[in-house]
Length: 129
Image (cartoon, rainbow, N blue to C red; front, side, top):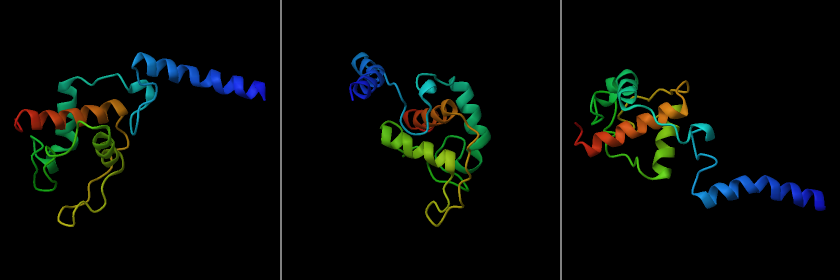
């Protein structure tokens, strides 16, 4: 019993230390733990958006012929980011009945997905610029 208790304590020390230091040991949702603090350069995120999203959602993410306005999405809360990441990774079978299905992009890394989410958020902040 003492060995089990010791193992539990030893396994929880890194998480406790990370919490005390204000760091995230494990990322929530679609991002991998080792990718949690890596950022994608803005030009790379813009290129990913142009290559994978703009045809449907418009060049400024304000909506287009095959997809809704993305600038209204919650890109600031963890729950909002997780929902967007899930949609990017798995696709959306029936978005709202009016739009065609959104394809999945499982090949994108966690860093790339987060870069896309940050790009979408920046479109709202820049007035869809």
